[in-house]
Structures are given as structure tokens and as C-alpha cells.
Amino acid sequence: MFYARSVVLYALLSICSSNESKIKNAQKPVRLFTEEELQRYDGSEDGQPIYMAIKGVVFDVTTGKEFYGKGAPYNALVGKDSTRAVAKMYLDPADLTYDTTGLTESQLQSLEQIFKGTYKAKYPIVGYTSRRVLNEDGSPNIDFKPEDQPNFTIKDEF
Image (cartoon, rainbow, N blue to C red; front, side):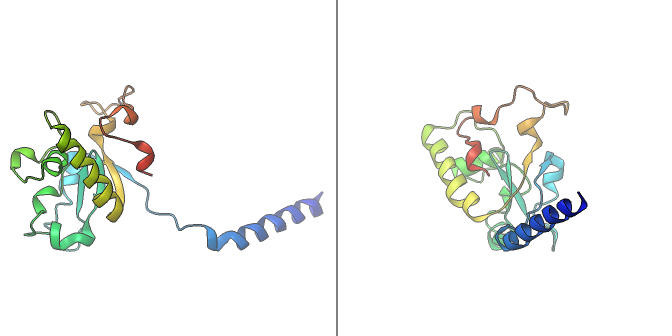
């Protein structure tokens, strides 16, 4: 019995070590951000990552510091969910919000293209905004279904 277990263990170790180079390194797990937590990553502190959210997906845009860092042209977008501003391609303070109510079909299509073609293509996803999955009181929203959200495809996020 002991010999059989040893052979099985040896076989498993051999398989694992031969496939070791094929296994991707695990990335940091994603997390849920409240609005207050996300504000901490607004590019105002040197050495701190710079995060922004679009459609409730939080991206690490630190590598684009020349665009998103302190004093940079798009710094107004970071530290919050700026979905509406990205859709409208406009940095008006009133548009620096997650709310997509009243956007035109053209703006929603633009949002989708920028979301996929720029942010998902260039920047790692580090989390999601709590608004996406929680009720106002912080309890889980059992009715929330990402696949039912406008212009949202869950399979594209992973």
C-alpha cells in the first residue's frame, strides 16, 4: 500500500514539474472597491498606483502616468468610475460618474470600443466597484446579473 502511494505521488510530482513552465504565474486577486477606497488611487501621491473605473471595472493605469498622473491631461478620470466621461469623451465634472442614463447609442458604442480597445487591451483589471454588486446598504444585490447590464459582456472581462 505504501509503495503504491509513493509511486502515485512520484508520478504526480513528475507531471507537475514537467508542466511547471506551462503554468502562468498567478496575478494578484481582484478586489471590490468602494467609492472612498477608489479615491485613494487618484495619482496625487508619488509611488501610489493610479486606478480608474469604467463600467464598474477598476483598471490599474499607472503605466499611463503621463496621461493619468497628477497634473496630466486625463487625471480628472482617475480615482473614480468615469464611465460617462469616457463615453462622451468629455471631462466636464458633471460627467465624471458611473451613470450612463441618457447617453446616445453612438456614445454607448464609443464607450464599448474604448473599454475593450484601450482599457482592457492595455491595463490590468485590479477589481470592481462595489456599486456593481452591492446594494446601497452594503448587502449583496442578489438580483444583480452582470450579463444583464447594458453593454456588458462578462466573458470579455476574464
